[in-house]
Image (cartoon, rainbow, N blue to C red; front, side, top):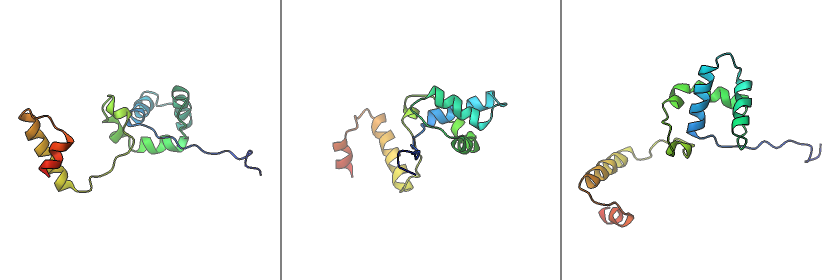
Length: 115
């Protein structure tokens, strides 16, 4: 088989917001199969290639995706990684809250000086 005859699979990243939409649409259209859900969202978002198995994986974690807020930030989030240093993360969050409560404008220079 020549290379031109082989179909190349294109991996596309699906945002949290689209995953939330998939879960909500699947709930309101319970009679639809995963293949039909994939076709619907492939038509709705032509730049994405969503397979039936991807729909299955998303729906297995539907509770997680339904909690995603509908906003501009969630359109840009694709992966969830755990914090590498949770104690440092908590300390930084507390510091940022305190500094911003005092009306200080955060800059990269201020953060570097503080460390």
